[in-house]
Amino acid sequence: MPPFSGLMLDDGSRSKKPYKWQRVLLKVSGEALAGDHTENIDPKITMAIAREVASVTKLGVEVAIVVGGGNIFRGASWAGCSGLDRSSADYIGMMATVMNAIFLQATMESIGIPTRVQTAFRISEVAEPYIRRRAIRHLEKGRVVIFAAGTGNPFFTTDTAAALRCAEINAEVVLKATNVDGVYDADPKHNPDARILETVSYNELSCLTCKTLEILRKLSSVRRLVPS
Image (cartoon, rainbow, N blue to C red):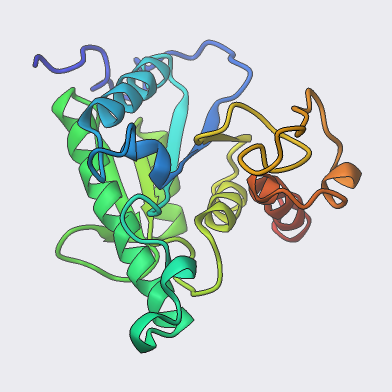
């Protein structure tokens, strides 16, 4: 496949058109990478994501990505099995996100998108450690940065990591690629009467318990702690 044209541009030649957002963070769930779930990772899905990201970066918009790992291993689901404690289970889940990140990086670079993977704990042989200033510099140079290993701490989800990284790198929006088509007032998988919400306020978020809203609640909290 020929490399995607127009991405390897220097800072002076990149598009400077005023788009609504200049720096975005995309949260990709592990389930989304699994596609129809015949395999842990569906190459057609990773290629579709890569092409979408390519079309955006070509416009000069800076893109960071946080990946989940639920398609390979979800710590909360395995905690307690065969003596596996929750912390250890979560660390295994973090390593699953690194696997997804490396696969997604390879897909992106196969079509010419310069990409870096940064992990919340050190795996120096395969990825860079997360360093905030380095991540921002990569973005400024037109590279896509994939954040893996969540926050590096057990008991925190990759949705929390997405909200945290968004605030740290001063991204203007979190876009979530997941297996639901919007924000609901309840979990649509378990409640057939769940209603999709066209708009939602921060105060309304605090009253909702649906897990699909976790990233929004976390972002609201982090925004109060980390100045943008």
